[in-house]
Image (cartoon, rainbow, N blue to C red):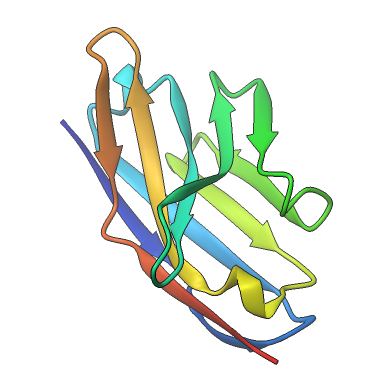
Length: 117
């Protein structure tokens, strides 16, 4: 089992920045990919950024050039640096970890990001 705990959400004005963090615990060695999804009110959950095997990161087109995913393996923590935030970035952001062998998908409880115009 893997447990994920997000932090760093909040209220920010358009054009501002926030950094989200996601700390993983438990069977972290089974994780093959880790990243972020978001869900805006009335919309489906969508991929924001996902890093596989710590090598390459796939970003949603809507955040390319503004968001950067990174990780600290010593802390089993991934980060999402969000710059030039827009009101349309307002959503609950969820940390996600994938284990390919078992096919399991783990989710954090989410952290709310609100961008005011």
